[in-house]
Image 1 (cartoon, rainbow, N blue to C red):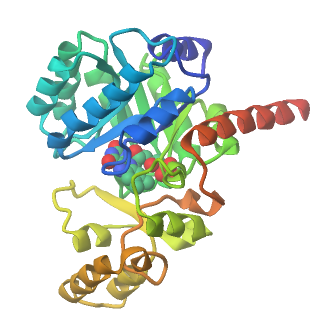
Image 2: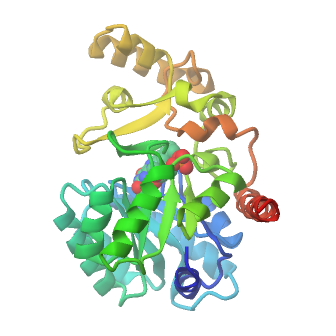
Image 3: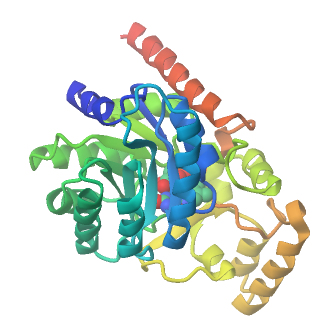
Length: 355
Ligand SMILES: Cc1cc2nc3c(=O)[nH]c(=O)nc-3n(C[C@H](O)[C@H](O)[C@H](O)COP(=O)(O)O)c2cc1C
């Protein structure tokens, strides 16, 4: 992290605290309540549009109504102080653009993830910049050094989100933990004269220690997904939230797999991606050879059990990262942002006093 990165982020998002704490654009989970709470607490919240661009207008309008009713001081009048996240292999660019163009407030950032090819990202980047007159800044989430360089060269993003393998939900099947990925990306980008792009670390970061560590690795901020699942603002069932709280030892009790996509009928992800979720009975049955047909049938039966269908012995998909074991309780999203920031400052001060 350099002072100029901090300045860039502070200029683009003047209501935010430094270092920047953001919440992931989790499809179907991160709607206006979560994104707005994170931004109001001095972070940057993202709405999860995902692959279904038909949800964009209503998600955006809900957020606009919230901020028109009660604006955040320090926000430029034509900027909506939340970002919007798209999963590019499935989202419809022209639909996204028409919503963006007609919107009275432009989202502060557009988060782009998982294109079929990098060239698709070039179109997304250029067109969103045009549709928002440059007001919507471009964030691209990548999971390898090669992708970070390729995206930097071809899209010149405003921010690169570096996703390590501990991340919950979808990510590259083959990647490394943030502890090596972030500094390797930072070094490679600096060598190629892209050192001015702020980096946001994500994947396994759940508390102030994770934020402090990310700063040491060269990030200017962090993005948390799994941690915000344990907030009342995340649009998930109590069964899901309880499973997140109850799961410990995340390296053993979560896995990267395509099983959950198969069971839920989610098709279309590029082959290089899978998703990290909590191990449950569906996963164990798949591992011990149960047919996909039988497993799907049992999954559908479990959807009728309500909150009882979740957890280690349940079958409902609990996408979450290895950081689950560090999450002890449900907390309002604003308190999570504040606690993570305060804790990181304490950790950094204590570390400095030992030098
Ligand atoms: C439940 C869940 C859903 C997610 N959905 C999306 C999504 O729709 N789009 C996206 O770009 N990333 C998504 N992600 C991945 C996040 O962008 C981010 O990489 C991840 O949450 C970081 O790791 P962490 O969960 O350990 O904080 C999701 C993550 C989780 C946990």
